[in-house]
Amino acid sequence: MEIGQEINTNFVSSRVKAIVNIRHTNNWISSLQNKYMSKHELSMPQFNILRILRGAKSKLSVNTVKERMIEKSPNTTRLMDKLVEKKFIERFRNEKDKRIVELKITKKGLDLLEIIDVDFEKELLFVNKLSEEESEILSNLLDKIRS
Image (cartoon, rainbow, N blue to C red; front, side, top):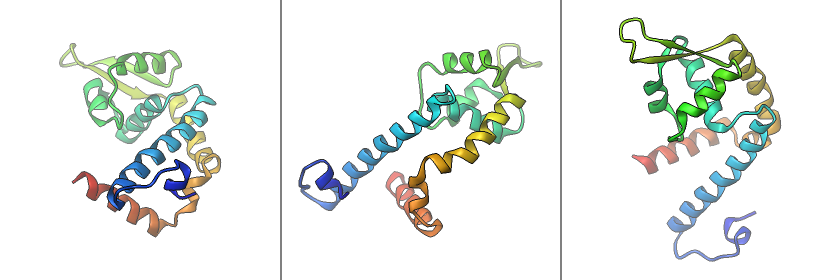
């Protein structure tokens, strides 16, 4: 449905309409993602931490993980504690500087991400509504907004 109809409003300009549409679509996607992640007892920030650690392929400091997170969160340490409790990540002290805490994803965490990778596109069918080319154009436009 067109955004103006969906939220029952008229826009003063196409630029305002685009910004409202981005925010509305972000909330809609977030809601779907949160519902999906709850099946795995994860939050989206926890999922983000796991993906960051998988991509690193080695230990990362807590601060590096925080810097790379999509959604900055003041309770990142608590999110990490829960992932440690679930045995999805491990925590280590840096051997050269004991003040630095490092994280690494476990086999259990990697296995969970593998399941999510397969299921995610099936569950969230909206990602298949855009072609690869359309997805690239959309991504480039969003990058342009932020630059």
